[in-house]
Length: 212
Image (cartoon, rainbow, N blue to C red; front, side, top):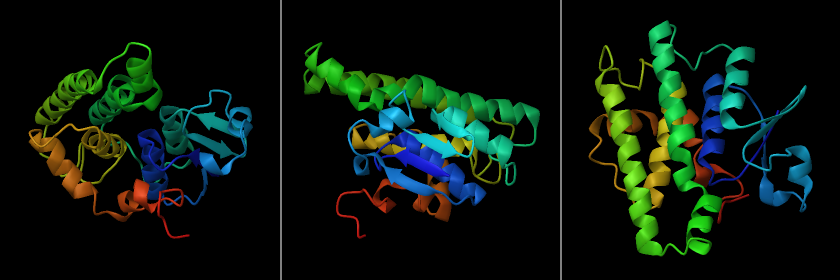
């Protein structure tokens, strides 16, 4: 497998964590290592990440995660209980579908360059949507049937690999998530695990200053 991404791409980090949790080996291909135009030919969407497999190229992190869960089911990313599986999927979908765009560079550039939003307006916009989003996720964890160490179980999985990169991205953009105590507790249980450590931006070969 080849994973096309960039060190600072939270969707790509989700996939790296999933590959690591499942013990799947892959080649990491930084987009800046490709000649201009090549990635668009590989993935016509032009978006990160993309996973090249024997049958072709899969774009979009949600589709990639589903593919990995279907083709490499052990260890599972989703809980065995059907209700918890649904909650974990909803948790991840909220981050990928509702919150992710707040951190996307092309969205933020459009706000700044086309709509003339200054730094203060951008920060206000980010804070509003990060605040609403993390509050909803905190409430989802409050409603769990048990206070699991991870989002929806005793081991990290689907929801956790969405949460940890999103918290990091929010901090990078000036949002302090420390008031969301359940989310922060889950994050603390994840960040020291090898699958998460190896997926972090600074562990990638294209991270500025990385040792080859």
